[in-house]
Image (tube, one colour):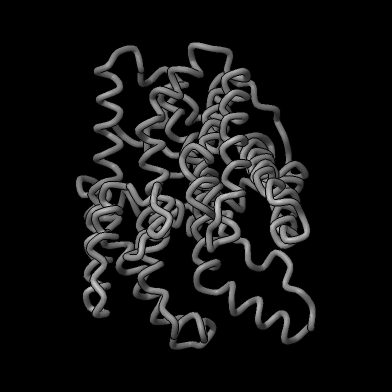
Length: 367
């Protein structure tokens, strides 16, 4: 089955992975430089980690597309098993390979994290306070959430298809909001992300929103929003970052609602990009962004291992830039080509066929 892609969705995933890499490799230095030169507080510069939320929403969108279009079915237990087999084939080879390589890094450092490896491979890190950010590779926390969503996805899709989509979406959003409110009182070292608030149950609404947008897209019910709506979405995301900067002046439970701003912002951008936002479409359709989006799984797996203390201390130093990006690109290209898509040609996966949203509505398969 040939894979058809929506160029603007790949481009948005490309922006999301660049946000995450900036967060882990450059945000600390950027905040320090801003404060040094201005003497002011570095608003919004430390919250590009919200790119993970963008990934979650887009995952729901992409996984729902074949079912929303009727190209794939969830009519039987065999359909569910086939879906889970495809997701396992898509996610697990690189996930397992990268986990063992990460474990090798910990052994090389003289502190082998065997327990973390086992928790990572079983995705039980999501339920661990000490290993929620896996000690072998911290960014793997979101991959555990992604895998758990993949397990729940066919049941969520079936629930939404059998009931009114809006009512089902509201029920899921309310459930996740309650989980996040409870999670705000969970003591944890990280003020933004924790094992309760950001478990698959606390972030299930991200995926469900993506599913709902995909269903509306296929049915032709999305409004033809333009570039001003995309700009409004960007403003909502930036406003959410300001809220995170102000969280210490708010009640704890307030942070549970911050994700709503991110979700609304992403939906505005996605709907505008799938509609009539020509400038937004042109930006998101740039080849390098689309390729970064197509390769985001590989880029995500490796960037955390390659960002070390030396790079974080001097991320803008020429040597740091060359060594980090050359290593990241080479390793990611290798795993993208030979682990993620070993049966496809290099030309097919690196020189992506550009397609329009309208021509893809009934053709997109899981990627």
